[in-house]
Amino acid sequence: MKRVALTVTLGLVAAAHAQKVQAPIPIGVALAQTGNVALLGQEQVIGARLAEKYINARGGINGTPIRLIFQDASGDENTAINAFQNLISKSNVVGIVGPTLSQQAFAADPIAERARVPVLGPSNTAKGIPQIGNYVARVSAPVAVVAPNAIRTALRLDPKIKKVAVLYAQNDAFSVSETGTFQETAKAQGLDVVTVQKFQTTDTDFTTQVTSTLNSDADLVIVSGLAADGGNLVKQLRQLGYKGLIVGGNGLNTSNIFPVCQQYCDGVIIAQAYSPAQPSAANQVFVKDYRAQYKKDPPQFAAQAYAGVQVMADALRVIDRRKKLTTWELPALRTELNKQILAGKYNTPLGELRFDKDGEILQKQFYVAQIKMKDAKNGSFVFLK
Ligand code: 1QQ
Image (cartoon, rainbow, N blue to C red; front, top):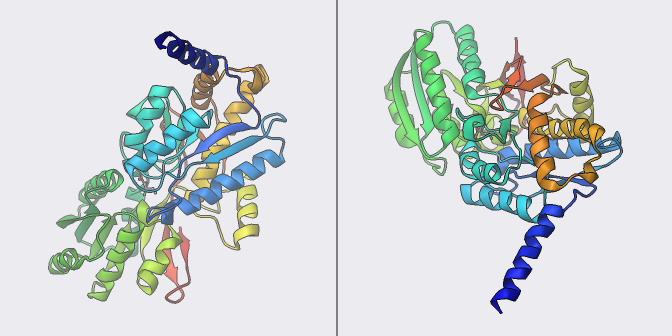
């Protein structure tokens, strides 16, 4: 009995090793498609799908199509880990674009690292993400680089700002990282951080934090949280009478907060790692395809997810020219893909980008936008000069 079982197990291991990569080339996508974090993830799914369509319409990988395999990573660590495990072991993907949150990346990326599967973070902006492992890179510029632009813009709009209230979600790794950057930047700009208030991404009532903020007499409020909590916090700040400028972090960087904070979203300043006006040819194609389908400009999270899929495809194309993808065994191709991702230079909707040896994105241009609401439902992100 025992010997039979052992033989079968060894047979399976041998099969996995001999397994050739099959067309269409499977690329895993693990994003938040359900739950509150889907307010952010939905835009990423749209961006990834547009990239797949565009790449395959132009012949895929030198004639071989790609296929995106979506596994809903939802908003928690465990859901992200499950999505990664399924993509790696059941779907045999060559690489993964995901997850949505840094909080999830710190839990799920080590799974891919151990399996030697390349990961591109499409929206993981906390400090330390590329350092999770050799197989982890990101197309999402870190908050340490992006976020300070929002404070500088706030000071330009209102040079009299002196006192700053900072609020952040203490149960979220990105929010903790971003508030660190915001607080350092505020101090470096000569501002007084008069109060620091904490909340949870699951909170819906912010009366305590808003009351302390109003009592602090701050003339700038900076919020680091995710979309649902961040949107509610902005709304309650305005409803309870806060009149000054508000800087929101990357977790509020979606028009999906409009139904949450409604007319009170108006005026929120958010730094951007993408602009629809980015002049690259790659961006012009992306903007045209996005507008044709959605009748508005593409948001940052869609552009970054698109760039993530594009980087995978561009790197695969280089490898395929040396040795046809369908002649590779899966583990060897995963390792080669990781090497090629880090070696390449990419013309994406984010502009030209490459990676440093850790897998950190090297990107040139950043922007700042301000939310303009027409009424309680309709609004847009207006890019500031
Ligand atoms: C992170 C983020 C989120 C706000 C992206 C959706 O930047 O978790 O790193």
